[in-house]
Image 1 (cartoon, rainbow, N blue to C red):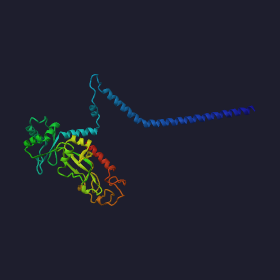
Image 2: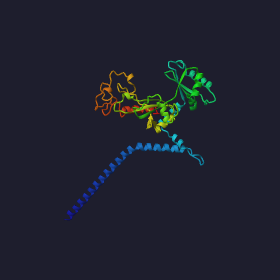
Image 3: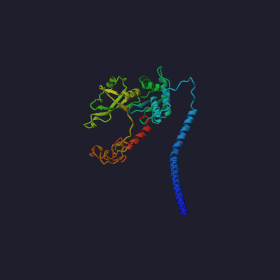
Image 4: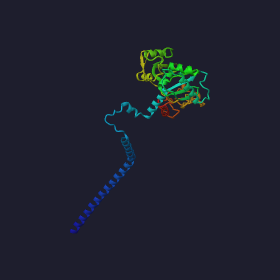
Length: 356
C-alpha cells in the first residue's frame, strides 16, 4: 500500500513537471515570436529613423550656423522671412517676370528687316547702345543694354539693366527718341498679359470697335490699358443651347491684370470673374495626339475624340460610348481634362513655364 502511494505521488509530480515544462516551452515560443516581430518592425522603421536622424543633424547644423541676434538689432521683416522660403517654382516665375519687365521687343515693319540676317549679335548690341546713348535726354533713366536675342521673324528682344529704362523706352518719349536715332523703321511691342473672362453672354458685342474703351471707362482703367478681346470659341461654333462663353482679354500693365484677377471686371453693369490664361498642351483635332496641331498632322485618317473611331469628332453619333486615344481608357473622351496623359502634359508645361 505504501508502494502504491509512493508511485501515485511520483506520477503526480512527473505530471506537474511535464505541465510546467509545457508552459515554459509555450512561453519561450511566444517570446521568440515577439522578438521576431520586433526585429521585422525595426527593419521597416530603420530607414525612416535614419532619415529622421539625418534631418535632425541638418537642422542642428543650420541652427549652429545661424547668426545670433544681438540685443538692439532689428527683427527680420515678414516679407524677408517669406521671400527666404519661396518655393522653387514661384521663385523661377518671379525671376522670369522680373526679366520680362526689363525687356523691350523691336519688330521690323511688314516685309522689312532691322538688320541683315547674318549680322553678329555683338554688332547689333553695339548699334543699339550707340543709338540709346545718342537718344538720351534729361528724362532718360540710367542704365544700358545687357543682352539681345534675335528672333526668327527678324525682330530682337533687348534686355536692359533697369526696369525704369525699359519702361521709358516703351512709352512714347523713349520710343520717339530711339526711332529718330536708329534710322531703321521699327515697331515696338509691349509685353501683354492674357486673362480669361469667364461666362460672358454670347450676345455681348465684344467685337465692336469701341468695346475696349467702354470697359476702360466703366472700370476706371488707364487709357489703352486693354489691347484686345476675342471669343476663345467663336459664337458661330457654339451649340444652340449655349448662351455663355469665355473670352480672352490682353492687358499691357501687370498691376491692372492682377487687380482684375483679384476683383473681376465690370461689363455692361455686370461683374465677371477672370483668371490667368495658362499654357495648356496642344492637342491635334485630327489624330487626338498631343504636341502638334491638325495643320501639321501626318496621320492619314481622322480619329474621333469621343469614341476613337475613324471619323471626325464633329460627325460622331455615339452619345454613350467614350474611348480615349491617348490613355486607352473607356471612362472618358480624348478631350477630357481628367485624362492622365493630359494631366502629365500639363505638369511638364508647368515645369517648363513656371509662370503658369
